[in-house]
Image 1 (cartoon, rainbow, N blue to C red):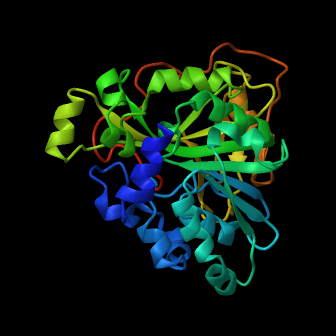
Image 2 (cartoon, rainbow, N blue to C red):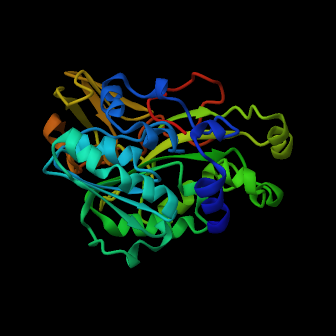
Image 3 (cartoon, one colour):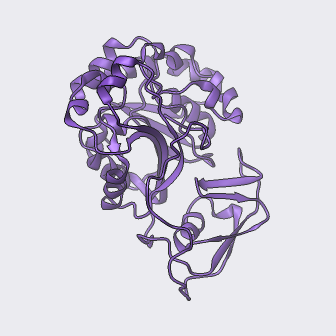
Length: 346
């Protein structure tokens, strides 16, 4: 897997135009407030970047952020503007050719931004413990269409959990399948490089996340992927693929189900980039000034994280009312195009 990925991204692809599927999306799906920041990134870095849209959670100023599979560093340089001079962004990638592009333009971005708060490390995202990174030292970890390329996804999730602070989050986009991917697809070098061969069945991903310390994975947004290359479409058959963004919080006390304690929150508003409403995930779009009932897990995700100063909290954990209404199972993704927001996607 590592050899295939390094060959595909380090030698075969010369720009994002060489990709054969819609697994990567264009800049038009980047939120408007981030487009000016993206425009400040060196054009060679943008042209040779193969990630999925843009992975950027809010409220990053002064935070320490790790980008797993950073490639040429497009997201690193965008995030560096958001964390500012008091924050830091660290990019990790296994492909030397991509890191060479990222480092080549480091001085350009230092001069453009007025500060230098990034660094790039060569290494494998499955072996984060081999890098000089202190456990519990990152507020946010991001990854942009890279987990599917890893042969040891459990090791990536476990390593990220180790590096996160309590209350931190792993916020990332990736590709998922509606069923387990057959061996022929998993072994196809082009389908691997196009982020399809290594895609997890969505329910296997949820199980893997919970096994590695993330008790309540939250789907932020998703969209179906169109396989427009006829030859590749024939190879994958009836499989359906989805681009999806998840956030996984490292929080003690999260439960396996959404339990009802009669709690609610009120978003005060004013958070940079999302002043009038805050979308925690696909099912929690919280309008400023309104009382919003929440389960115990959602209460903790807001109360015990960097989001707390922007909320008022109602209730506690003294009385339990059973399962929170509306929490069910089944395919979590929208199967039709345009069925979900697209500000961050694969």
